[in-house]
Every structure is written in structure tokens, then in C-alpha cells.
Length: 230
Image (tube, rainbow, N blue to C red; front, side, top):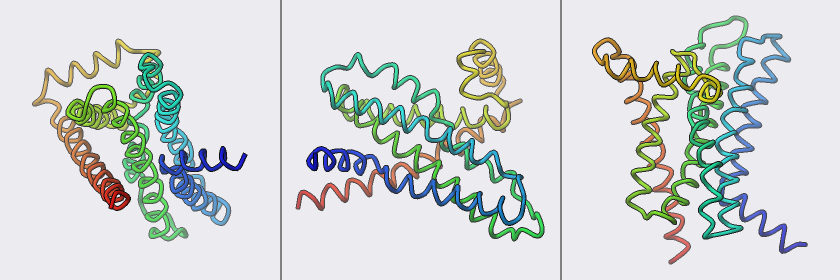
């Protein structure tokens, strides 16, 4: 029993589960305190956005668990991997909730800045942790070079998805219910670049932002692996 619990603990720790839970609890705590003491519901959507940010992490968790059960069973991974990719932009999307920030007396604006930053950080951390897991799986089956192409493509699509969510008001569910309309919206923007400079600028900005965050995370984990080997 103790050995099984230790194994589960190590698996959770390898997926950054504990700091992600702690960060999420802090974010929800700050939001809950704001609602309790100030009777304000301005940012209640943050709780839902945080829940959606956990969805891709859970799918990456499932994909890794299936891989551990059957290391050569690549056919088990396409469904959780596809669902992970569809919902992945929901995690870093929380960063754009800073658009709702403005002074709301008697609530100090510094409190709202700290609360939004906590939610945004948690969303980015969830995205980075789940992407790291999926890159590990891709690397195992297709090699390191392909895994980095996978990372770059995922982050570009994430930047695009965040834009569509914030300004196009599309969400991940629409890829199931209205796939043609979503594809048409993207296509029209791509073929009219000079009329959609915000689309390209926003996508590139968030792709670069997420790439830098990811590289910082990966470099840190590689340093820890080097320490363990020495």
C-alpha cells in the first residue's frame, strides 16, 4: 500500500500537480475573498476560465497515464491528444482577462492586479506543464526534432485560438458544433492579411510569449535532470 501511494505521489509530482493545485487554490481564494468581503461578482468568470484551463492538463495527464500502461500502444493516444489540443488555448487564455481590469472602488486596484496575475500565471503554468508532457510523448514516438516542431505548431495554434476566443468569441466547443463556421472565419482572416493586422499581430505576440515561457520552464527542468545525474 505504501509503495503504491509513493508511486502515485511521484507520478503526480512529475506532472507539477502539487504546485498547480496550490496556485489554483490561491487564485480561487483571492476571488472568493473578493466576493465575500466586497460582495462583488465582477470577476466570477475567472473561476470558469480556470476550470477550462485545467481541461487540457487533465487530457495530457490521461495521455501519459495510458502511455505508462502500454508504452508501445500509440493507438491509445490520438483521442486524448486531439482533445488536449482542442482545449489547450483555454489555459493561457486567462492572460487576456486583464482586459477587464480597471479601478472599482472600494476594492483596491492592487488587489485585482494580484488576483488577475495569479489566475493568469496558473493558466500559463497549466499550459506549459501539459505541453511538456505531450512533447515527451511525441519525442518518445517520433524523436526530438519532430517534438519541437510539434511544440512550435501547438503554440502558433494556441495564439490563434486565444485570439478567436477573445475577439471572435469562439470557444473550444464550437469546433464540435460549428466546425465549418470556425474554419471559415480563420480562412477569411488568413487570405486578407492587411485587413486583419490585429489578428496576425496578436497571434504572433502570444505565440512568442508562450514560447519564451515554455523555454524557461524546459531549461529549468533540464537543469534539475542534470543535477540528478551528477
